[in-house]
Length: 397
Image (cartoon, rainbow, N blue to C red; front, side, top):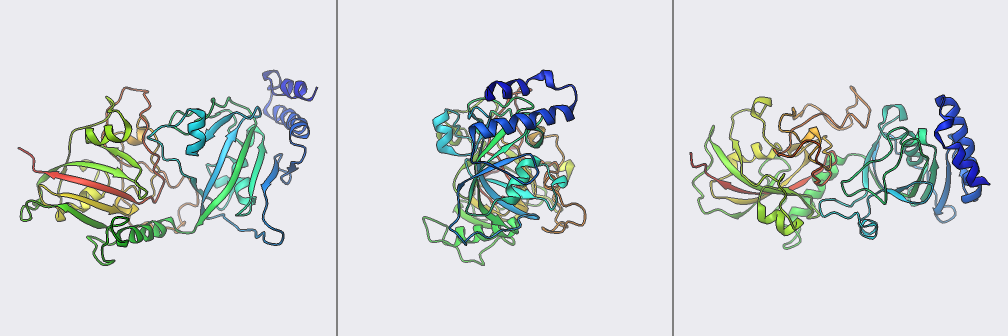
């Protein structure tokens, strides 16, 4: 009887007005929770319910205010049938058959704005993250208006689940856990680079801490057959590259053998020709589009014939930019504008205090693909440090 009532309540006949639908959906969710999750408790007066799957030892619970900070969170999103619709765990993806080699399966890093109305995170998820205590694991039942409303979830970039989520459907935010809280991801990224490059080989590069090309930018020369043949001012170099995270996960490359060895294929949308970059006396602008700033910043230190690897802090990568995990997005278009705003400093929210402030358009790498075709790559979060490898060639003309 309860299931039948819930099914009727969720049907489209109840959607004459949003307020009526919300009221009916809340009543139906109440019935569903009482029948299927009797231990769940209301989460304040939000209309949501939660269960503590893993609790902290008695007396050890400490409430942490994560607003205005970054959090790394693990979670799975399910519909009320229990089917997974969004997942960031590699083991789960393999079990579901949704695993892709292009996807970087790590906890989600989110900026939690000081108020929910300044956030792009669905309000129910925002509320749950601000209420859960680090060390706990929750399961949260969220009505559709506080989740994904009329949008639902459609993803084919490796984070998908057993099926898509339809619009106006309540969800279960399952296995929610805060893994890490970060006050300054830009500083954290720099520290991670320093630890990586100074670690003994082969785990790291074995470099002294002060052996930098620019502040925080480290270069390790793998081969330099022409030590005197530097790239002159206003001259160009053809660069073959591979780009990845500090943990070794490959994001992209324009070298066909690298792509094939890592992903098992070279797609028609993959660019396998060199990028031509000009050494300029000033910072690049929209008339001089190129990939990440490191391509420009490192040129004075390169020689034709070099094979190098570079540890790149976010300032020389994509800074505060979020890059989508598919190249069909306009953010990956060679016509997108880009900016390297070094006047902006982390925690300076005199202009904005929003999580969507970290998504101004930028330029990444040129690519070609048929319109509407999803071309998966790894998601790149704001303030992410990267590792690049360059092979530098002198243009024939």
